[in-house]
Length: 139
Figure 1 (cartoon, helix red, strand yellow):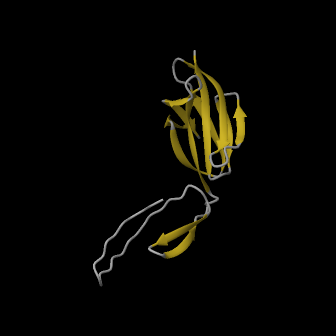
Figure 2 (spheres, helix red, strand yellow):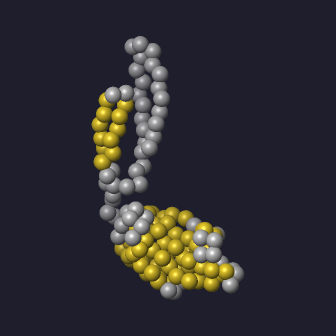
Figure 3 (cartoon, helix red, strand yellow):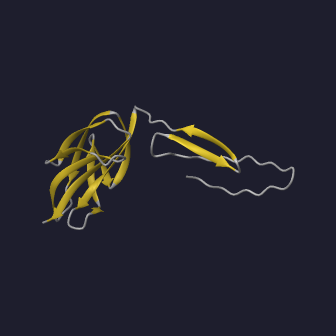
C-alpha cells in the first residue's frame, strides 16, 4: 500500500493524507508510529472492473487488437468499469491470427467463469474484478 516518511521538529505538526484504492474488499490494518487503526474496503455491487484483450497462446502474452463492448470499439488490452448485468463483447481478430476461445475468469480467485467458442459473446458482469481473454493463435 502507501508509505510516507515525515520528520517533524518539536512542537511542529503536519497533516498527512493517503489515498488508497484497494483491489479487494476486506479490512485493512493501518499503523503509524505505534498508533494503529483499520478501515474496511467494500465492493460497490453496482460496478465491476473488467480487463480484456487478445492473448497469443503461442507466446502466452497480450497482443494489440480491438474489442467491441456494448457496441463501442476499444483498443485492447484495457480495463473498463462496467455496471452489473449483461454486456456484449466481440473480439476483432488481429490480422494473421485466428480466434480460439473467450476465457473469462474471476481475477481474485482465478476461477474460470465461462468459456465461449465464438468471437461474439454475452457476459453477465457480477463480480468486482473479471478478466476476459480472447485467445488467438497465429495462422
